[in-house]
Length: 202
Ligand SMILES: Cc1cc2nc3c(=O)[nH]c(=O)nc-3n(C[C@H](O)[C@H](O)[C@H](O)COP(=O)(O)O)c2cc1C
Image (cartoon, rainbow, N blue to C red):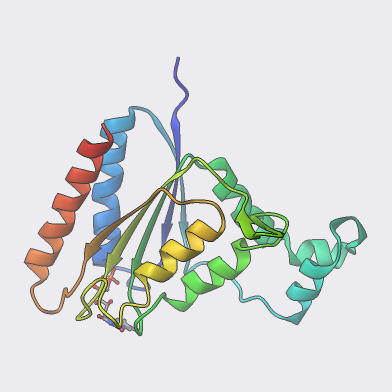
């Protein structure tokens, strides 16, 4: 019997109720369920429980793993857990709005916690190389007024760069951009993109 597809869902919107990016994430998961059969789902709201890296975190990270004190290991425990989730997943679904032309601060906090030299990427004479591989990444982006891929979209290219940096290059972006201009059209365009991305993958 085929083992279930392991899906990690990450949500960044700070909107607790009618979040468009989370609604589209629900749609995407429905399609993933239909196309993969059985799934094993882990979900994380990035607004809950994350902390920013600080001098004690950086000091712990720069200390060789076998020399870390119990306090330093504890300082890196959340980062280890988040990276463990990424390593576990076959498929990552990230939903995020644009905040001030880029990622919400909670998503940036997550990025800082999972991009770790020697763990998710390493340096080689040819430059940094990502250490994760073989995972599909779907990113749902919503914006109020900024068009995707416009000169002031510092979100979509940045996220592609970050995932590529840790080795994940199979990145599909679904966008409901300019929601404040014509929400209905933006949303239905994104739903169509979801449909197409799964029929293309089938
Ligand atoms: C704090 C904040 C900053 C925002 N900054 C931008 C922005 O820079 N550009 C933009 O197009 N929309 C911006 N928006 C609008 C959101 O991206 C948009 O409303 C999006 O649809 C929200 O997604 P959600 O419903 O999943 O939370 C901002 C919204 C908030 C709350």
